Image (cartoon, rainbow, N blue to C red; front, side, top):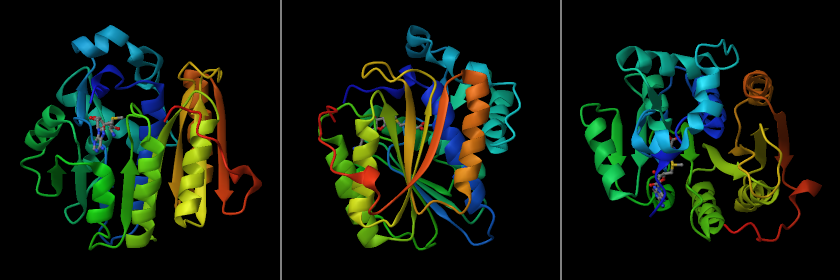
Length: 284
Ligand code: SAM
């Protein structure tokens, strides 16, 4: 496992991904019934934006640095977690488990998986005292088969892989099949990088192929897709919350104003023409 997320924390794909994540959390918080989140690829939770890794890439400059301190009315919770954390320590960026943890009420739960031994230990230590959070140093894809459905019967499975290995989309497809078998009514959000159009098509296809009837695909691209540059990123959301497409559209508009770029949100359903067989020449 070579991928280390510390090199990329706070870049433009993160700003979009975590903005969308907070919109899903806001939806879950609307009802008093408890919810659970399974974060299959957790990372280390909080990132130092002045670490050696972060300073080597400076990816935050075209990401969170352009958003911080600005008004983001489409995703207020996005900035809230950031500001709460910054109040404690300057120059840090909260990853997905930290975003979720900030949203949890007493009765809600977060289950996080992280396969990397060092990162897994760090994450365990970080959340040791929070009894709402359980951290597992294990394969997040397998956890989708083993840990669902949650007793709460409502919540989110957040799948945010590094895409460093060939066969990652096959693992996503298998996990979505187990997910649909075990918990067909859960919300599933799968993140993907955009260099070309292929990977997003394959993931949306995998979701529909697993059995999900309602799959929303949302993408934010500050740069041109040339097949090489990290142009942007997207999420395929199975069982998307009601009206989230409108909120995502607004989020993309606001981010486009701050970061530049295009914005797209589209709802794909089983049988859509857009979901034809897509060849796997994306390298994943
Ligand atoms: N979700 C995190 C966030 O938003 O802050 C970032 C996750 S990062 C893109 C991917 C993480 O997945 C890395 O920390 C990597 O070590 C871990 N990882 C890779 N393969 C995994 C697997 N099969 N199961 C669980 N974690 C894995």
